[in-house]
Length: 181
Image: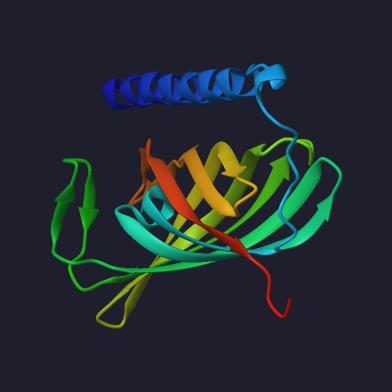
């Protein structure tokens, strides 16, 4: 019971944090910024710290659909646990294990703005010594793609592992690109 109350408090704090980030990013004055033109690339690569692979991951993301103020993406990532132990005194990391996050997200926001709200679900496959574990994940965050094609993401990325709910966050930086153009 005590853990459930503790978990609910952290969940509420995480959601409030994300809502404040969204409010602050969308309340910037447009008069101070030049007009924005969204990059045309439909591929992103990025490095994520925290997030769905718990410590870090290298990721590829494909924009599957984009129209006006709605987009849909698919993502796959890769990481290797560098040593066994608890990360940030909260999440157990298996040394030598392979972490492969898979997710699909919707992006909400006008094409005239570089900030997008990201909402998604997925799972992380954890494989080590012939055994596999599937960890359900989610993301609620903000993605920014600058006109110079630099991508930045910050998000609340909770997951459920071994029956326990974990509040987690991720930060990513990468690049938007096109293939064959």
